[in-house]
Amino acid sequence: MKVGVDIEKIRRFKDSCQDQHFISSIFTEKEVEYCQGKKEPYISFTGKFCAKEAVIKATSKNLRMKDIEILHHPSGEIKVLIKGEEDQAIKCSISHTDDYAVSFVVIEDYRI
Image (cartoon, rainbow, N blue to C red; front, side, top):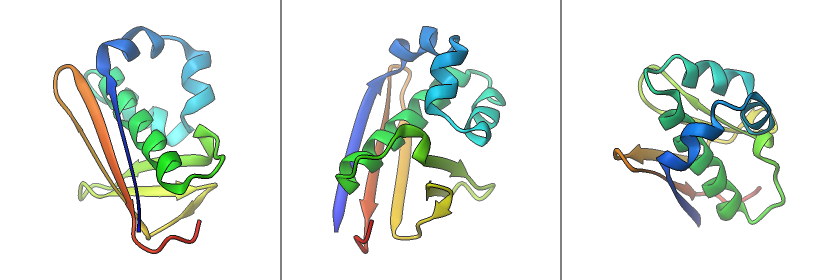
């Protein structure tokens, strides 16, 4: 089993999320669409950033941020795709307060 965690200050991302180059270099189109559909998109962008960082830490691989896609199903379940393929061994949780976002990743069957 492998684990990864990341925590970020939401305030740090508020201005960065106004920069389209920043957004397009880190997030996929589906992620951008999801986040921009929220009342305060920068909070969701921060959570997804944390999740991507946590995946990188858990896998110990040299993955680019856009190699990882964090998708939310209507049920609330988070799906992690690596290079476009869902990896069911990766379990991800994202949470936030007014000030911080955090993500925790567990890889049950490490094969990445």
